[in-house]
Image 1 (cartoon, rainbow, N blue to C red):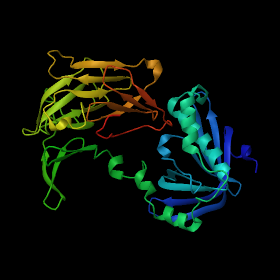
Image 2: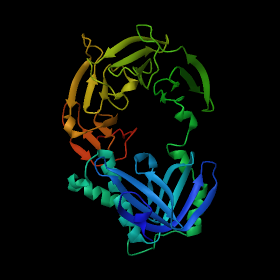
Image 3: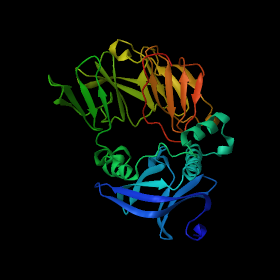
Image 4: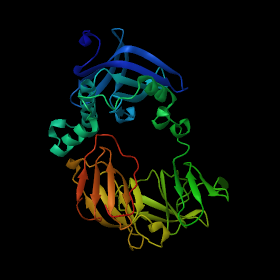
Length: 376
């Protein structure tokens, strides 16, 4: 088959195999026993790639290569699954590769495309550590099939799986922005569900089932303006609820006994993307300070500072580094793991020092993370 006549852009890699799909309603079907995947690069200036699906010598589907594909590669079964939309409806696809070598070659090319798109730079600039990481992720046993499972068993598992429920198409509630996040108390039996314009309060009953307790009044800042929290965090033995909102340079502190914001911690114009306790179980204590990040900066916020700028210690990356920090977590000793939009994870002993380790990523954004209590 002459692929160039059917796809746009430069062909990077091709693969052949059986293509199955599962719709959002759970309907399973085999699309084709003789399908082709063609990875193309459409624009080298912004690292734009597409995953083309061809069946019966015709173009069946084109999907941009982005992290939202929710790619899942199964080495043992030589399968690649991803989620996308077809005619406005969510659908999951899975290709069973014709050979182990083809599975390895295509998957490595696909992950490199994902890394380049996520980082917006050529993989040729990647470090040797990054190159080894991609190879390890896509590595498979080319010479043997001893780990390959029964085909029919694998198809039934895919048909019954909740693949779409773990992708970005999972929750229409989440897509509408109703449930933003949730905080579970570790000092008090309370759970707070942030629904943007309101906060719902739950507790666990004697049978460990959630029951509704109350809905707090709409959140207002100190000036009386209504706000919709974008992120929440319990603080000071679960007596305070810290909130971020669309104004990116402040933290709102709500007294949960009174159900109102009692203070605002500003950062002198430094944006805040995410916040986290100073140590894994600091919420059980009266610790005042918190950790915070934005795209290029890891810093602490201390509400005791007698100044409009509550920023304390800080470590800032140059913009050219493209750190793209996205989330963080702390150990029991206060050591930090910081995730990024590029999938990289940086390990810090403390705020104010350079990272002691950098774990490479595949260009897939890290949205949330947690670590064990022990030192990292």
